Image 1 (tube, rainbow, N blue to C red):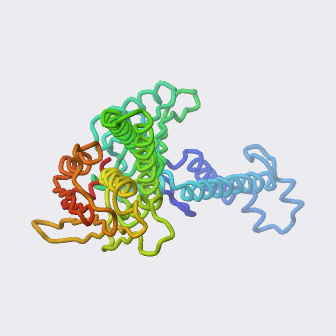
Image 2 (cartoon, one colour):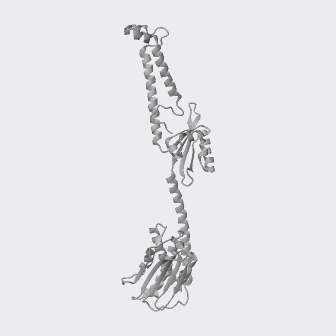
Image 3 (cartoon, rainbow, N blue to C red):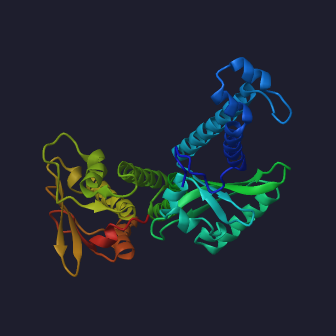
Length: 403
């Protein structure tokens, strides 16, 4: 703990200050006891005093004695002022500053150091500094920094310290304090709190790893969509059209996710984004209704492709191919061994519907992807009045943050 404006000596009270204090007291005693001063008290004749001064055994005049005393007192005052300023300077720093013996024992710590450990000076001074780091590997690193400082180099490392649940990270620099002969006589350890910077770096690393993971998954999904599209398309032009549409559906889904910082996306916004290219000026052509539901990135991508396939087929063959056709998307939440999301796509008013003679990629995507990815159920029916799709999936699985 820093000693503030006070004459209390520090743990290492300077030999210089003690010497000056002792010299001042000695000079005062000699001055008061000198024969000239005693005589001057009796004889008012200053000329007589001046004439008797300088005799053998008398070291100088009263003026010289007074000058020496003034010089000593001035030096002492300057020293106290310098120490007080140094104390204020150290107290103003939030860094944890410690002076160590060459063996690493703490001999002094600053106010910032006391705050960092939240302990009284007496509980810290005299303890080994290297052992104060909780992790064994960090203790070894600290000992290495001490060895470097003893050798005249600068040791530096970064390590956590503090409560296990909420440690603070410190950037530590250890260097030597050199004595008059140029050899290290003490060590200086300065630790700066870099917790916020450390957490920002960790968050950045996590985001980069997450980005790499999502890019790989997205590329794998694009590869699967391309393969299935080419396999089921009757010709290259049809394959290109279908593939471009599916890529646009993925792009729109990513836009929805970006607005949610890739953490979650609103189901209503997802449905509106998928249907936007298919909605015309006819009132009531498309309706969507349901409670607010947030979905995780993986389910957003899957549902976007599913709804895109339904909307594309409706525009080509179903309700959206007719001016009188309508599409309604509704959803709700039900309690069935946990919260379950139930969503329905229902077409009406379009040309009569018949089941397809051959199931293509869209049908397989709709019927299988949800089951495989989220443990849900999908029912795709083709009554004459319009296609109906019902899906159910555990809400927890749909809100999973992985993608």
